[in-house]
Length: 188
Image (cartoon, rainbow, N blue to C red; front, top):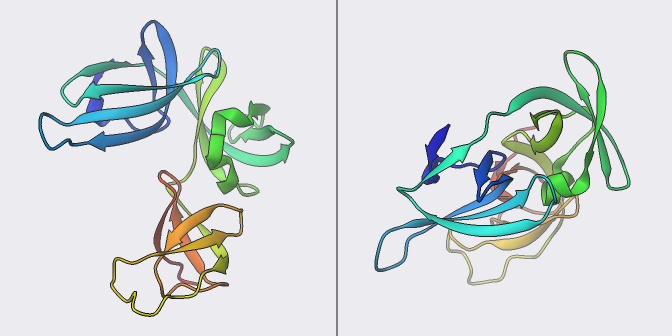
């Protein structure tokens, strides 16, 4: 099915230049002169190689029909992740490179959806946000009291994220898994 390039999202599977690609990241770029365009980081489903491409926002791309299955994350064994189909209880493995940096957000028994094309897992879709604890946060620098100033913080899963100055070590925060950004302080 044809869709406009600006409606692509992470986890979608598209056909481009005769190959199947899983969309990893999308960035809308608006240069000072000329029209806006979409820069897309994607992974070849067959070989696992990454590529970047650009489309104008008015361009169309072919979105592939994907079977989406609700699953639970069971465990990680090295660079292989094991999931269980929530309806049939069948277990299957997914290689770590399919998840990329989002693998750090997986938690035991987390409900996810896995996309399949022709019986092969091509993408794992995490919940839009997860709650994690800050284990290390830089102190606030005096004079940086503007609301837009952020400081680096280290999450319990090992990822670094920019957090507001009022967040301290030990706080639980909600993190957007799509672009790995701070959303809000978690309500306990």
